[in-house]
Length: 118
Image 1 (cartoon, helix red, strand yellow):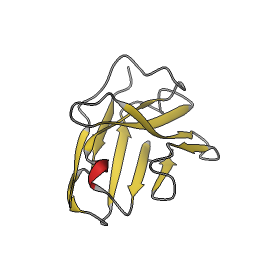
Image 2: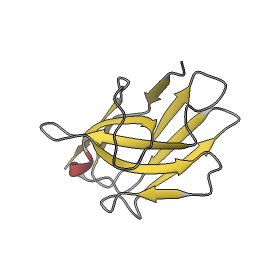
Image 3: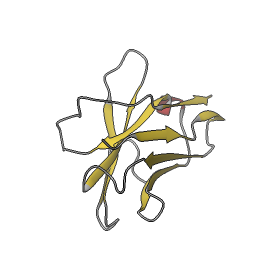
């Protein structure tokens, strides 16, 4: 079973940037479509961005469009989320997982904490 490990989170001031990484332990990613998700305190987990393994197709939540960029490096078996112009409302635990549209996966890793101070 492929494991996904998130990293790159941290504390940053509003307007700053972070790059998150998602490393897959298997020979490849577990699904053709992969995504980033986040869960803020007291809120439900939500979709952030998705990408096809080819990297040709991407999708973003409206709240992050123009600020976040998702990318994938199949040779390194790593997916990235470049986050620019961060806002306090981006504070959350960020997770990577397979992307199945509105249906969220059942199993999740530990995620990586992103905290944006105002």
